[in-house]
Image (cartoon, rainbow, N blue to C red; front, side):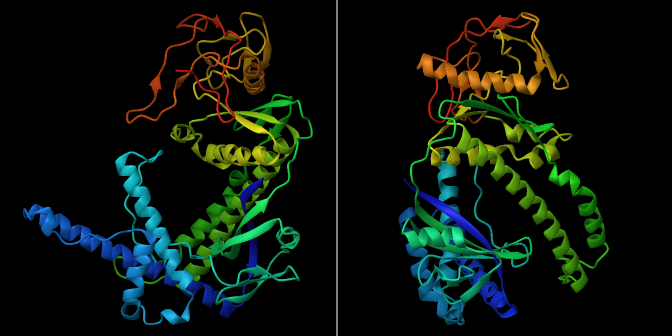
Length: 459
């Protein structure tokens, strides 16, 4: 099975090497801003001509924003715009033009309604001070050195790694991987290089071939499994909050930049900002490490993992819980499980967003009309079951997967909704027969419908 996988390594750059990488990132920004300014000028000119009643056939010729067209226009103007262009690799300019072409394509598709998700705005100019420096190489000398502690990138030469690249080197030596591109990026005060690699992965089987696990994510516990295991929430952001506040107060006392007066920041402000950035990067790295360990363990152990389709954006609207929800990384857990289960011969099932996993009794199937958020223990009035709220939800999620093997078709148990995103919100569908109506308690019939990606309601 061939997959596209990324290998990311930290770099230890000398001062001269860091200046060279920054020069490449700056060249990408210059090319991006030049092409964007030219496109905006033509679009504004055509808009003004239309307002004057100029016929369409007499309007200023429009410019194509495909990557080949942008590259051709840049090559024709680079001697005037950037006479220093021979000092950096051509891949630097291609990085900025490619980012602009992708942004314009996404904006156009979003306006037409052919792109799913949130509306995409028109691309903006990249600032020298606020843009994260990065440059992508797709051609030229890109390799890992035999000592596995150095990499070679076009025009930048031999760069030392902070850690060994043995995992990638072994695949390259065995012929099961092929480097497609390399991206150098500064993140949290440290430079990293990420290799996009086409990997030939061998077929794998989970450790427990017949097991099914339901995963209910939360704040008190990061994840509650249907097996009864409770995964603690490390709360990395909360733990680092005191230090982050101290660093933020120290930064506010320094002389920072002022765009109104064109005042440049002081050296002390820059050093304080770097310390605050490193502290935030450490929190992000700790969170990423914990989520990777959890999702890898689930993917290599269980062939079927069931999660919920949570409305994380709506949950972040709760100002009391927004910080804790963002710190937990609910969406990242689902994203990692999606590709790790396929790598290990399993599948990820997603329960419908409106499925009442917390309100349904895992013993008898009765559904409560209301269940307040502060009620952490589920007490069933029909069968008398008393169980932890999150464990009850994880058992219901695991039961959905079991029902899918037997039912095969038909609507999923309990409520469902039209999954197509509408302009004015969700399109609700009626309840299934047997579910609870207002003020009553019903029983969920044992029926369900599943696919490899989602447990949704049939239409």
